Structures are given as structure tokens and as C-alpha cells.
Length: 178
Image (cartoon, rainbow, N blue to C red; front, side):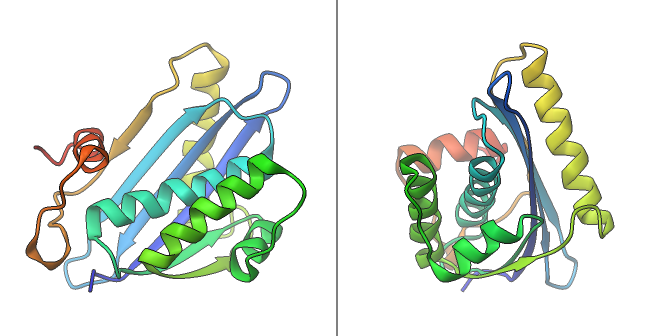
């Protein structure tokens, strides 16, 4: 089983330009702690979809850095997104449903509880809000849409090193070495 982690997510969107910024902050809940963060600019014009994509990014980073079975408490400032994720709700939008289904698959590999936390209500929520806005500004100014990730040197779960293309790409993005 992976180390327990608390994760905060946020997204900022400019619907007119069709771009958004996502941010993730994870805090390990073990002696000595540790933290990881990620921000990403992407083409998205809808705030609900962007919030779900931030949750997806957070769970992908947790899965790759801490491994399957990790206990995750995830905070999001969008109450309707938290409700969708908790109850498995879907609506008529294919793009949003695909993103929700991706989160559901990741949730099946981890032990996740989703919680609502109001925007800017804690230092962590203020931090992810600021990073999401930075990523949005980067995209607005025409910056390339690419991840900007910082992560601690974490061991894969169960002492095994996962293999495959996705793992190699994420290890490179996260700076965990080959």
C-alpha cells in the first residue's frame, strides 16, 4: 500500500481564448512528509472540465509517484465536480463524461475520497489557485502547452519499478530519472 497523501487541485480558464491552467499540490502524510506539485496549461474552454482534468492530473501523479493502493484525500473547490466524482454522476457532455470516466478508472487503482474545500480557504487552496492562474497566464501569452512539474524523489510502491511507455514519460516529466 502506498503512503497516504492529501491533494489540493484547482483550475483557471479563459473561455474566450479556449485555454486553461491546472494546478496540483500533494502533501505526504508520513513522518518526514514530502510534497509534490504540478501545473499544466492546456486547450480547454470550460471550467468544469478543467477542474475534472486537474483532479485527473493529480491522481495520475499520485499513481506514478506513490503507486497503486495509495490512500488519497483530494480537495477541490468546485462542489459540483466533487459531487460528480463521489456519486459517479454523468451528464450529456461527452468531453466531460470521458474525463469523469478517466478519473473513475484512476480511482479504482487508488483509495480516493473526494472533498469540497472553498476557494482560497486554506494556504494550500490559495497556493493551487495561484499556480493555476500562472499556468493560465502562460497559455494566454502563447506559451507552449506543456507540463511544469516538481516532485520529490519517491520510490514506486511495493519495491518494484513499473515499466511501460506511460511510466517512462511520467518519470521524465517528474524528474524521477530513468
